[in-house]
Amino acid sequence: MNDSLVKHILCAKVYDVAEKTPITEAKNLSKKLNNRVLFKREDLQPVFSFKIRGAYNKIAQLSEQEKQRGIIAASAGNHAQGVALSAQRLGVKAVIVMPQTTPDIKVRSVRAFGAEVVLHGDAYDQAYEKACELIAANDYTFIPPYDDELIIAGQGTVGLELIQQLNHIDAVFIPVGGGGLLAGIASYIKYLKPSIQIIAVESEESACFKAAFESGERVILDRVGIFADGVAVKQMGEVTWQYTQGVVDDAVAVSTDEICAAIQEVFEDTRSVMEPAGALSVAGMTNYIRENGWQDKTCVAILSGANLNFHRLRYISERAEIGEKREAIFAVTIAEQKGSFLDFCEALGKRNITEFNYRYDGRNDAQIYVGLTTKDALAREAIYEQLSADYQLKDLTDDDIAKLHIRYMVGGRPPEDAPEELVFSFVFPERPGALLSFLKQLGQLWNISLFHYRNHGAAYGRVLVGFHAQSSDREAIHQMLTHLGYEFDEQTDNPSYQQFLK
Image 1 (tube, rainbow, N blue to C red):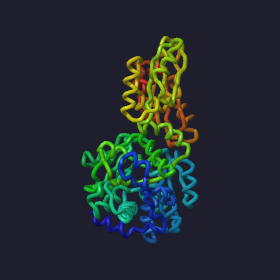
Image 2: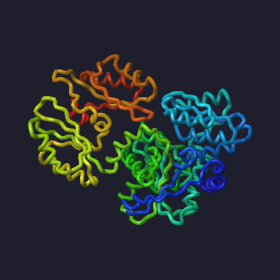
Image 3: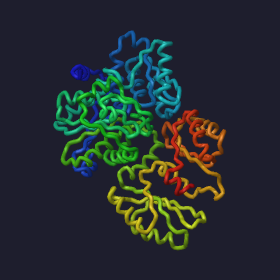
Image 4: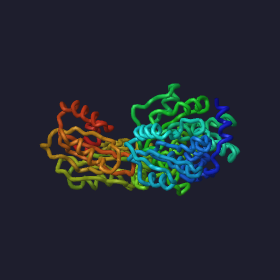
């Protein structure tokens, strides 16, 4: 089966529009990891993503009749731009259905390439359903994002170039969403040089390939996170899954903080800013090298894209230090009396403080939210042990609620006689009017007692909400929220909420 794909890769029609992208040596990261680290720069394609390869290869090989009828795709990101540019170059009418949550920068980019944009729904599934309606009405040809042999072959030309560009490679780290890039690169490289290790890298929030790799069959995830939106799929493709059989050596998943740290690592070596999915391979490679104790190997990470909404940089910058294990976040209890603040700062010594949140609330004890610079995870543990000898301490470094919401709300306690409160975190589609709609639906039955929202420039917003409600109301609230259709989790027992806001 892979023999056929290799032939398609060798015959792929991509270079009428795609670039043969360079290899960049990551000198800083190489020194840090004691291995030779190389970046394959797919962020330098005309649409700042590898997706142009597969899209052009597929569209270029359509029949003349199919081209005349026009093509359609459903995408919120890089595939949309690849299809639009490819259609423009080939003189084919293109319709792109994009979710209403798609950032304006991507919508404008697709329109600039001459494609017709239809905005529909909040997520890919709804956009895809609309595309199917338009296909039935207009007989367009659908251009899938990954689950197609010609699409996979186009992406596989990345592997062809790697073999041509480098005399020696020990391992290639490849980001995975639907699996097109992984299937193409792995099939070609393993066919020619089976000794090269192929490592698939996913976000922990959407690790469908890792689950399939470990179980031996495709898996459908119950839910996916949307930080690395370019790889946020619940199930990898059927065709891509078949092509990955026997050609992938291992699969790893990385956290949001580790992805943010990888974006920073790439920037420091290239002065280029990756989108989260674009830096995924670097995060996986960094972890894999450290965990396996590799030395003096040549490792290639595929930088798959750089279509980043600029406003997301605030969030990425905040989380990068934690991802690199260079920052620790603690909740500390100190006595609410004169001199205790100074005593605590003296206990910290000359450590660099990255964040210090405190608000007097008249109680016997004061709660402090503090961030400290650390060298690594071991240093974080040492600080915890030292401070816990004299203070009540909680490590919040891995607590997403603390980092997304609580840090901005320290001191916002309710009065002593306030009613009981139940707290929930939500994810809702980020589009004009969405927050108002969200509030209108939430506030109909229970009084809202706490609310925190901060725009991170992503397609989905994250909100922390408290309701004046009894424990006996919990089941009814869960039913109401399930009916509303927003993704949610109860956070009433979250330790950072309990310490700072309850």
